[in-house]
Amino acid sequence: MRDLPRAAALAAVLVAGTAVAAYAQLAVSANDSKLKLVDGKTTVQKGAPPDTVAIIDLRASPPRLVAELEVPASVVGPPTSVAISPKEEIALVTSAMQIDPADPGKQTPNDKVTVIDLTPLKATVIGRIKSLVQKASAAAPPPKVLATLQAGKGAAGISINKAGTLALVANRAEGTVSVFTIAGSTVTPAGKVTVGKESSGPSSVDFTPDGNTALVTLDNDHRIVVLSIDGTKVEPTKRELSAGLRPYALDIAPKGEVAVVGNAGAGLGDADTISVIDLKADPPRVVNTYTVGQTPEAVKFSPDGKFVAVTVMNGSNKPLNSPFFNASSLLQVWSRNGTQLTKSGELPIGKWCQGIVWSANGKTLLVQCMVEEEITVVRFSGLGGKSLQKAGTIKTKGGPAGIRTAEP
Image 1: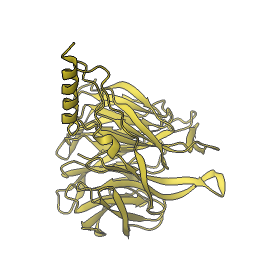
Image 2: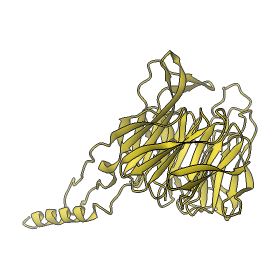
Image 3: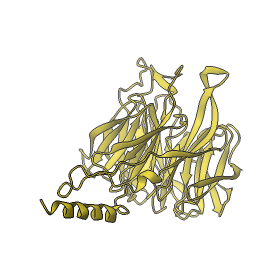
C-alpha cells in the first residue's frame, strides 16, 4: 500500500511526458441538417436543427467522437468542405448553401468559412494507465469557433497548403477561388482569383506538396484549371486539363507525383470514371482513366500514396422506381503503381455517401453516409478479396457531408 502514492506520482510523470507525443489524429466531419433525401429527391427540411461539426479521434480504437459544435455546413459541393491545418491547430469549414431567408423551403448560395480552434483537443491525453492509477483520464475542453469569414458565393471545396500558411476556397456559384492567409489560428482574407465564368462550378481545390501549384475542378465546364502560387499571389496558368464529364472531387498524392479526379458524370445511370493526372509531366496531363460506377463522390489517397479510396453513389441516391437504383453506395480502394491504378477491394456501404479519410497508419477509413446520418468505420488490410471490412459506425447530428484530416 505504501507504494501507491509513488505509483500515482510515476503515472503523472508518464502522462506529462507523453502529452506532446500522444496526439489524437483528428477527423472533422461537417454535417448538413437542412437537406434530406426523399425517394431520390433532395428536400429542404422545415424547422431543421442547426448544422453541426463532429470531431473524431481517428487514432483511438475504435475511432470515437470527442466533440460536437454548431457550425454552418452543406452537402452541396464535393465532400472536401473541411480543411485542417498541418499541426491540427484549426479547422476551416465552408457552407455552400443556406436556407433562403425569403423562402424557407429553398436554399440560396452561402459564402461562409468558419474557423474552429482545435488546440484544446490536439494534445490531450485520453486513456488510462491501468497498472498505475485506475480511471486516470483527462477530459478535453471543448473546441470553439474563432471566426466566421466570407469567401465567395457557393463556397465549397477548401484546402490548406502543407506549410499551413495559405488556404484556397472554390466558390461554386461565382467562378472564383478565394485566398486566405493563415498565421497560427488567425485566418485573413487575401482576395479572389477568377478561374471561369460564373456558371463554371469551381468544386474541389488542392495544393501540390511544394505549395507552388494548385488544381481546381470546374465541373460545369468539364475542365481542371492549373493555378500558380507565389507567396499569396494566386493566378490561373494557361494550362487546363480535360479528364472526363464533370470533374468534381480531386486529391493530390502526398509526394505530389500524381493527382486523381472523380468525374461525376451526368447522373443518367451511366458508369462514370476516375482519372489519373501525371503532375511530373511537362506540362501536366491526364494519362489514365478507369470506370468506377455511377457518380464517384470522393477520392482520397492513403497517407503513403499507395492506395486511392473512392466513394461511388452507385444509384443509391435515385428514386426507388429508377432502373438505376441500388440499395447501397460503394467504397472502392484502388492500388497505385506510378500512374496505374488497380482495384483491390470494394465494399457496399450506406446510401448517398460522401467523404472519406484514412487513419495515419492506412488501416482504417471513415466513410460518410448522408441517409443514415452516420460515419462508417472500415478496416483495410491491404490487397485481397476481403481487404475491406465494416468495423462500426459513428452517429452524427445531421447528414455527414464533408470530412478531412490534417494532410500527411
